Image 1: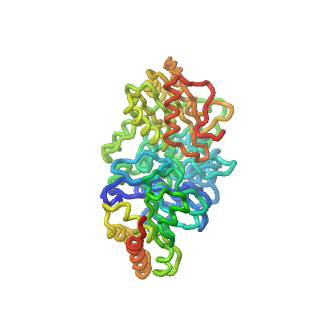
Image 2 (image 1 turned 120 degrees about the vertical axis):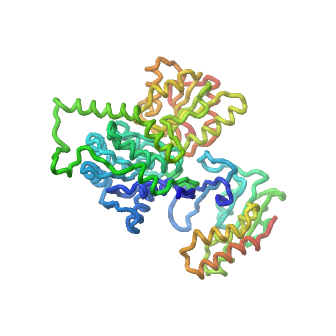
Image 3 (image 1 turned 90 degrees about the vertical axis):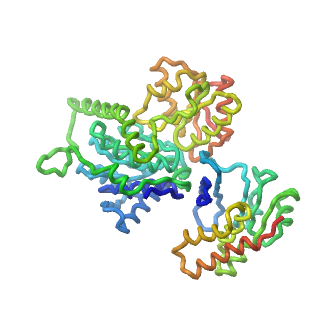
Length: 163
Length: 388
């Protein structure tokens, strides 16, 4: 997004720093400078990387009717809507990112396909830019793993269910 | 080449350190400033700097090594947070008395107990009277720029004082955003070489550091340190203008945001000022004359300038991210004192916010301004966002 000329801000909310612990992270994207540094209260986009959190937290807190949900789950958008008590008109995109990464590189690391799913929200930035940026940032990965991740990003874009 | 990259506040500070290429860095890592010595250790290991990097067994040793190296004539930098800063407490006044121009990346974190890794200003405020210059940064860009600027400020012949460059733990230190960085050559020529006045290692001109000074001399020596801080107020702007000439960015002692004709002004430091400024814009659109005064330089405190900005306001709120339990919070105390000296009787509300990383949202700033407008001002301090 930064390379596409946007102003961006990204920060985590640290709790317990151990692998698998639930954590929140916030991002802001803007056409102008970003001064606010507090947590995001009314998100335009909610991305849920770990599907077990659907049961544990209330991801719709502070959301509006225009909020887009990007959810890593094998379930359909309709099933997620009824689980979260969202109205039928809510915008939910689901992707089985866990399955994709298990197939592509045998590990449950759903971040790369979720990046591809994200490209549906920021449609002015083509999916190729996300792949290219990832490749540059992760240039130290072994060639085979990097290629698997690139495929995973593209599949994260292509295999979505849009509700 | 100048670059603009997405990096964190800590990495930005470490990147400035790489470009400054100090003679000595002695450090002991502590959250949330850990990234600074960690990143710098990488630069050392990869031969990107010529620094003598001293890893020690405690913060007390880290700052002691910094003081001795600076007395020897070296250019010295380090970083720490919270209880690490508190462990250095004994040595900070010695650095100031030795007139060691150390530049210190202080990443603000609450002082335990209870143990908490998040931001407030209780660590640096504990060093309020140590004789160091305190600069508080709003974002990563300012932390980067201030690190470079602070070298020249600290080493100014009329100043020779150590400088804390403070940024908010996690909020700034771990937030990734775009930062514009100068090219290495520009930084190198801006900071130049340290030309130490009375270095310990100049064996042809021997000097004594750490000597005994009883009641005959102690007072006079402390008075000289007061003079050094007066000189900070005098010379800061010219150093900041020099930095502007190479970077295009000017950082005044006070960041006056829409205060010129403001009736209601919120005074704040560091990262929370972004939220206040956004709320000021919102209120201005509704016709409310709101303003934000961000105090960037807390020591020396630019009291006369502060009084000039606030003196004509109808009401002022001062936001402290630290307590002085049983007394007035530090920033409030300074502002009240400045107004008293100027004979300005402006209604003032002291507010404490954000302790232990409690978030500060726009609705909090909105409520503070609403109370100022209503004249709902009390002598007791208020606690913003506290669960009561």
